[in-house]
Length: 144
Image 1: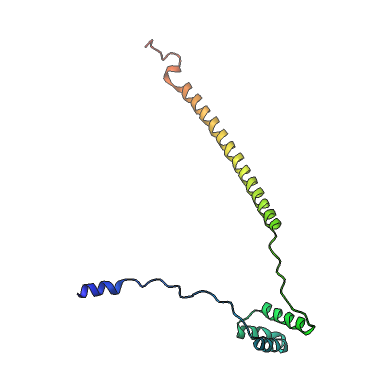
Image 2 (image 1 turned 180 degrees about the vertical axis):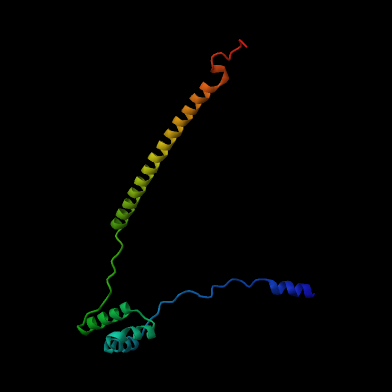
C-alpha cells in the first residue's frame, strides 16, 4: 500500500500556464486626468519617475493629452493607425526574393566552377594512370 502511495505522489502535476492570458488595461477618466496633470506639472527629470511609478509609457500619456485637447475644442480624438500596405509588403518580399536569387546564382556559378575543376582533375589523373600502367610502356610486353 505504501508503494502505491509513493508512486502517486511522484506523478507530475498537470501543466498550467502560470502567466494566464494577458488583459488589456483600462484607465478611468479621473485616473487619466490625475496622472496627466501630475506628469505635466513634474519637472523634466521627474516625469520618468511618474511613468515608472504608474507603470505606463510616455506614449500613453501623450495619447491622453491629445484626447483631452481634442475634447476641449469639442472634437473626438482617435489615434490614426496606418494599415499595412500590401504593396509595401509585396515590394519588400520582391526585394528579398531578388537578393536570394542573386545569392543562389553566385552559389550555382561557384559549384559549377568547382565541378569543372574536379572533372579536369579526374581526366588528368586518368591520363596519368593510363600512361604509367605497365601494359602501355614499351618493352614490357610479352617478349619477356
